[in-house]
Length: 488
Image 1: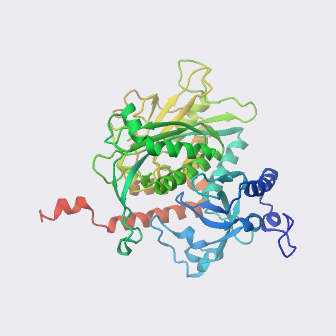
Image 2: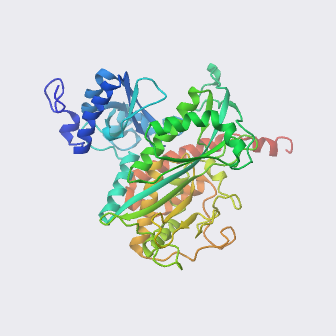
């Protein structure tokens, strides 16, 4: 079968709609060669949904070529689900609650593999994996594709003469899995969380002894992540019990977001197979457990000269003018972007003063209490800013897109940020949202994101988050029971 025709002699879905560039066409041929050389049994075709969760199908090796050319169908109801996997839109009504014919009645969309993302999974025998983009059957891009959202913002940035560089610094927890809670009555939407125990007591931050106590699983994780081709830089023991931090070398464009998607899924899958539970939840509800953050290091590069445009030429300033304007944009839109940087109810439990997490929109020179930590010096090619607001559960495509949108707005306005804060928890500045409810209100009020991403996408994200909040508000919490059960 020709790579440009299906078994009926018709042009393939990919060719008919012109969905691959020359690099992807060449990569598709390499995928088939690798699949044969490595004796792959299956390849997983996956897309990152609205929450940054991978969903997909597994294709037998003899069907991979056709699946790449023709795409893999998936139900549109996947795009209508909240974080409990509950469908929140009336999909059986006309327009499916979206006002779109394509979303009526759980019809199909098509996953089209990006062959340049192909990996062989070290922990799963005979298994390959590819990330996909999503389209409707007529070849129209699905407007709710978060990967496409980021691609669009990277293209906007390129039109202005810049490349986006990002480095990942991610905290997470790994526990021993004691009881996965698999009795039928423990299932649900969501299911009961597992019972776990610690790998180590924690608190001995970056000590050799704690590092060694984590090494049994850490050794497996780092070897598999390197085998995947992820640009792992360091593995560290964080302050809290069973808390890890991994950092990655910076990447360009879409690569850091793709790497974060694969990293989270890889860690969870590897740990589960080894009898552990990994979680990127910001603040697990367990005694003595500390919050985890996702610090996003970012800079811009001139796409003609390759120069770091954040690098200052004077020791007396933290960043170049472009870098400072970018920071001003991040600060001005910090609250509006919070739904993208900190998208869960739980994530706001971390944003408290004197906790190494930000509570207000300020920047500073190398101060870990500020939202933006500026790291720039003359002749320092690694000059950059670190945004410390994010949580590890954030959808990386939306997190990074929000940074480009806000930063580019700052550059276009050409406005200087306020002076860097020496005492970030004491300086007078705009407070960050204290809850997902406040973040949703801030996004609704910040017209920049609606202007850039459009009413359809912003209303979609707001509907998903409001459904999550509504479910949260109907639950009786342990705090309420302790506070009121005896008193009244």
